[in-house]
Structures are given as structure tokens and as C-alpha cells.
Image (tube, rainbow over the protein chains, first blue to last red):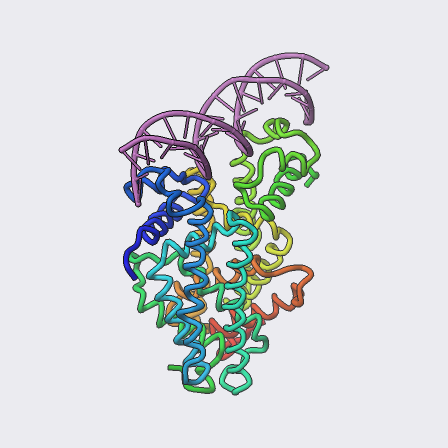
Length: 197
Length: 197
DNA sequence: GTCTATATCAGGATAGAC
DNA sequence: GTCTATCCTGATATAGAC
């Protein structure tokens, strides 16, 4: 986990892209944010799009590796979904600018990279749907349609990066608690049948 | 409501932007989609960004004018929120490509136009929060935090345009019914106290 | 209102020295 | 690994005729 040059570039680029938009930021701008010249970036990345791709993987592949194991942990579906919501929000908080970029600039990826990123996202969605369906079968959730619930859950979770600020009125922990309640207790109806968390 | 040249251009541009991304689409591409030459577009719009601005207003100003009056109509808060969800989804359906663009390409707007669009969005959010708070005061909803609930509702509604397809498994009416249940009945808890719809 | 032709320039990417 | 210098494509936007 050494602070490599690559990670430094990716993070600086994410900050700049998040503030000004991918298209408006030049390679020279990214380089300046790192303290080098534009041409030097090409020693680390083959193109500007490759930097964007690295950012997008941070917000798709990384959550899959970090959060989805929470769905395989022991516990009831309600407990596992609650853990996922918490893990998702903590990742969102750690990688806020990356999420903003990865959420809005997908159109700038090459078709190949776009396909990889879309696959990661679809897989995450599918795992959420599966655990919701498992909870319904177990009698713990009572939603009529696991697909719709999974869409609403994922969209609500992803939307958070658009309005959450560290210096806002809501703290991270308040949002975590509030969203666990909204998602697990209310949307999925775990509060009315099983144990929530 | 005559099919003016302007509307035609805006809609054709929205379709192209939605498919290929704002940055990747040239004025020549937009013109070709309308059947004219690139230079001719400048008779109708001063810049490419102005076309994008028109698209963004379609998905921010227009819902404010069409949907928010539903919150002032007679009926309980639960009925009014249900009407808003339906109205929102029908607008999303009518203006699908515009929503996709207006949701993802905000970074390409000038600061002035971005501010106008952001204001429209914030106002919509605030009206949702207000009706949720009104429902809580009336004893019809039981959410602990109207702000969080409003965020989750708006994010879930806006996210729909990313996955809903006319040729998908879910029809529009199924999504409307499902989301009215998820939002009003479950998240806000209207099913457990008052009349839903 | 639409056309042809073109000005203009930003920005991604490369070459090659150090 | 970083630099200076530069190429060069592509795209917005304009000028002015029809």
C-alpha cells in the first residue's frame, strides 16, 4: 500500500475532474496538481482515459472486493444488508471525489473499459438483489419485487456522494444510521418481522 | 406547441449526447441528426453549451412547473407524494434521453447556467422535504429525519432513468406502482398509519 | 435559414535529451 | 522519471454568399 506515483496521480486527477469535469481538465492541469509537467504523466499512463479508467475501477471493482464479502458473512439477511450499507457509505466517504467522477464521467471511457466498469456495477446490483430475495424467502423482508427494491437501494446509496459533505449538517455516522433504517428497516420491512441490527 | 426547429434540435442533440456523451459529440453530429449543416445550428443557438442548457432546463425547470403543483393539490401528504412519484416517472418516461443528459453532463455548463440548474434542483428537493415534514407533523408519516428521507426519495427517483428501458421486463406502470409503494408506503411509513392512495 | 469555406486554437500525445 | 519543445488532429465558432 505504498503511496506510489500512480495512486498520487489518480487521486489528484479525481479531485480535479470532480471539480471541473473530465472534459475541461487538461493533462497539464493534472500534472500541475501533482507537481510535474504534462508530458511526464505519459510515463505512468498511456492516455488521459486510462487515468479515468483507474478512477472508475476504484469505485466499482474496489467496492465489489471490499463490500460484497459482507453479504457472505454470517448473520441474517437484514444484518448483512445493514453491513453493506455501512461499508458502502464508508467507502463513499473515503473515496468521495472518485465516486463523483466515476458516477458522472462514464461516457468518456472507451467501449472496452466502459464494458468492464458496467459489468462490475451490474454484478454489485445483482448481489444486492440476491440478498434481498434471500431475505424475502427467509420471511425477514416483505418487498413484493426484489429487483425494484435493489434498484431503489443502489440508486439511493450512489446518490449520496452528490450531496454529502464532510462539513455539512449531517455527519457520516448519522447518515449511516439513517440509511440503515431507511433501507433495511423501512424499504425492506425488516423492522416488522426480524431482527435488524 | 408547434414542432419548432429549436425543439427539434434540442431533442436530437439530447439523443446523441445520451448515446455518445456530450464531449464526444460535435456540432456537425447534432446537425446531421437534424438534417442540416453544422454552421446552420448557430442560427438557432449561440453555442453548443446553450443546447445543453436547454436540455438541462427540460429536466429541471419543467418538472418544477409540472410536478410541484401536485404537492399543492388537495389530499393527504401521502396522496400528494404518490401523485408526485407518478408525475415524476411519467416525465422521466416522456423525456428519457433528456434526463440521462441532464443528470450526467452538468459539469459542461457555464457557471451561470449551472447555478440556475442547481437552483431548480435544490427547490424540487426542498419541496419534497417540506411535504415529508408536513406528513410527519400530520402523523401520517413516521420518518425520523425528513431531510434524509427526501434525499433518498429524490435519488431513487432520479436513478430510474439509468436503468429503465421501454423494452425491459418492467413496464412503466409496474415501476410507478412499485415505487409508490416503496416510497410512500414503506420509506415514509404511510401504510402503517394513514391512507395511501 | 441554410449553405461553403475557413479562422482559430486548445489540448492530447510524441520525440528525444538529461 | 522528468524535462523542453513541438506536432497535429479535431472541434467550436465565424464570415459572408444565396
